[in-house]
Image (cartoon, helix red, strand yellow):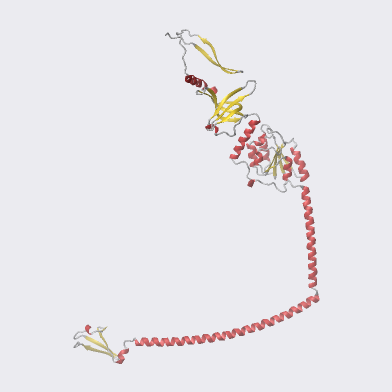
Length: 459
């Protein structure tokens, strides 16, 4: 079959207000046309691959789309499935999937109706023939209350992770009982400052140092932080206050930098933002949270009326106590005066002198008796010692005489006096005839001298 000449055409991407679409421009004729060719026949898989190739372009990769979450379906595997929709003149929707590895980094829970910004790329899934948006990251939408709620939740988790909130009970400081100066961070033109001053003038007048700040709108967080820092070291307690308002009006008091400034303040901080039902992140970093600015003023100062009543009560109690003490002491003085009467004192002195004389006599008698007793005891002890020593001497003399007899009995020369002789040869004592032989020279020791002899015969 003869080959057909290829047809050249220009493919353009039209971005009109009605949407994005592909379009073809009229073919360009080839000056040297080839024979016409039969069109290629693609399989479904090949078509799917071509679609994926077309979608794999810079315009559809790493893009951010805003819309509302609908049809949210979390999977047991950890993947998240939902649709991102837009309601308006032209309704639109796109199927989305967020894989498990990306979903684990979500900072807030996903639910239907949330306005979010999703970032990722467009993909085509050939097995189901469905185009879907692969989500890598989800953030709250920049506008709307829903986005602000999600932003607050993100900030809360961030501040909790770094330990800024909540402030531990052990670290919460109480304002001084009698402050000398109070700092107020609020708007210069609002009614909050006047409410605080009215309460203070009624309860406990004292100086108020205002650090004016922008309390809502863009850049308000910088103004509030600067005001808090400007009061450090100048006041005894700081009130961060704002009147009631919408969630959006109070949103600046959720800003992490404002929360950190409150937590790091060297001066105790009272949070009085909004009404009792309004809760901001600043409340968790402050030393105390009160429902209104007026309540904050009541918290930081005592009530002058109560103080005066207490002082009057103390004065009456001191007066009554003093009168009681004076009455008791007056009676005691009267008794002492009676005791020191001259006549009674003279009789008392006479009695004391008589008692002293009796005591001296008893002491002298007891001393003499004690000496005599000790003298008798000493004589007895002397006699016992003398008798004991005499007995010891006699016993020792007898023992000494016995030992002398033993020594004399053991004297080898003593038997010589009874006619015995001690035989020696060469200076050694001869004890047996077996030690001798004929002609040995012997020395015979007698009681009164020595004799030399010679052995002539051994029997």
